[in-house]
Length: 402
Ligand SMILES: [Zn+2]
Image (cartoon, rainbow, N blue to C red; front, side, top):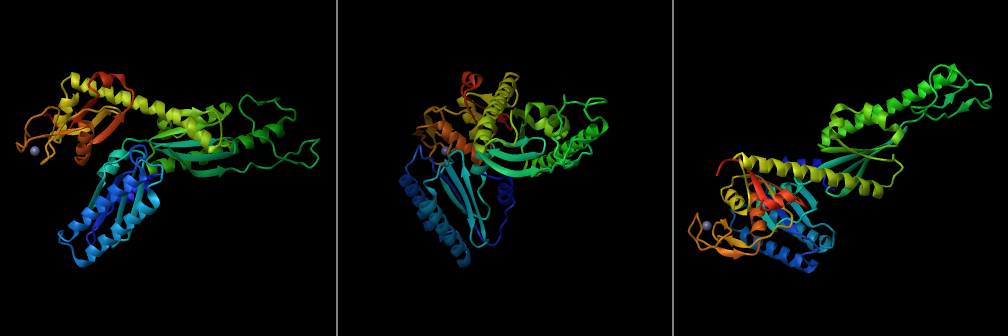
C-alpha cells in the first residue's frame, strides 16, 4: 500500500550532487502482455543511455545514473511485470542512496526522466484521485485499526484493554474472584437494580469506567494517526448496543470524518472488512463526484472560472489554464495534435502556436489528460455520472479566464 509518509519522503527529496531517475510505466495486464511491457521499458532505457553523454554530467554522476538504470532493469524485467498493479512509479538515485517504488491503481503514461528533481506529477495525479480511509473496529475491550487506500487494506494496530478481575465480596462466589462482563446500557442499574445492591453497582461502575478509558485510548490513537498520516475519512465497526457510547466518545474532529458504520467489532476478518468498507467508500466517492460535477456546472452557468465540453476543455489545457479536470472514465474521442509543440485540437487545422500541420491521434482525451498532468492539473476520472455525460463528458475548473 502507498503510505502517506512514503509520498512525503519523495516530495521532500532534494539533491544537488547526483541526479535522480524517475520511471513511470504502464503495467496494466489488461492492455499489455508482460513481454510488451519489457519491450517498451527497454526502449525507454536504451534511449536514455544514448542521451546520457550529452547531459553535461560528471563521470561520477553518469556512473550513478547507469547504476539507476541497472536497478530499474532488474526490477522491471525480473521482478515486476507479473504483478497485479496497473502501473508503477520508481524513483532511484544510486549516488544519493535513494529508492522508492509505488505500485499504482491506475496506469501512468510511460516516461523515463533523469534530472536533479524527481518527476512526481504523474504519480501525484494518480494518488489525488483516491481518498485515505481509516477503519476502526472496536468492542468493550478490544480495538483494531486498518487503513484502506486505492482498494488495498492494511492493519495498523490492535489494542486490548485488560478488564479488571473484580474481587466481589458477595455471598455465593466460591473463589471470590470472577471476571464480570461489562454491563451495557439497558442493563440493570440504579438503586435496587442488582441482586446484591451496592457491591454489584460498584463493580458495574468500575467496569464501565474501564470501558470508557478503553474508548478514550482508542480515540487518542485514531486521532493521532489521522493527523499524522492525513486520513480523509473514518469508518467504524462496532456492535449495535455499543454504537451510542462509541459515537459520543468520538473526538469532534473524527466525528466530522465519520462516513459510515459496520455492524461488527474486531472479530471480523480482514477480507470481510475490506468488502463491506468498499461499499461505503463507493458511496462516498460517488457523492464527492456528484458534488464536484454540480459545482462545475453551477460555475459554468454563472459564467465563472469553469468550462464544460471537449472543445473548451482542450482550449483550457492548450493554455495551461485547467486547475482541475473532471472526465468521464470511459470518454474517448479522436482528435489532432501538433507534432512539434503538443497543441491539441478536436478538428483538423494548423497549430495555433507554431503553424505546423496537425496530425491525427486516436484519443484526444487521453492526450489532454497527460498534457494537463504535466501542468500540475488535478484529474478526476468519474464513473457513471449522468450530469457530466449530459455536459459533454468532460469539464475543467480554471486557474484564469481563457
Ligand atoms: Zn505547434
